[in-house]
Image 1 (tube, rainbow, N blue to C red):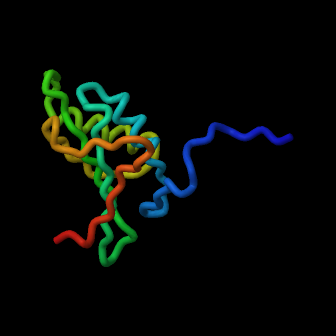
Image 2: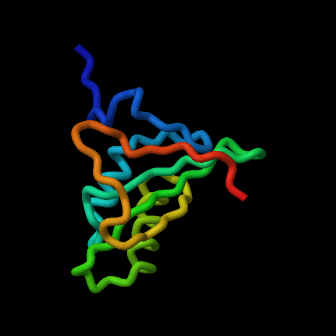
Length: 116
């Protein structure tokens, strides 16, 4: 019997952004490991553009009780995504209570039309 590695996620949860395969659970792990973020509140936006396959933006919330500046949270998430997934992403850091909360197995991924 062949041995397989760690299962990352379901194939229907998979995103393909600029030929990089991304599972939302990978993004969730990065956010959970980042100090000063609200662990249960995050959102992935995939933008479709005319000339490229798409770009990805991650929206997170900063904890009210955290003394870390939002610029540091953004740079930490960008650096960790680059290190783990090998791609650059945009990161938006919002105030706590801004993003929707999801129950059960809802995947917080939204597709946006072309941005100007």
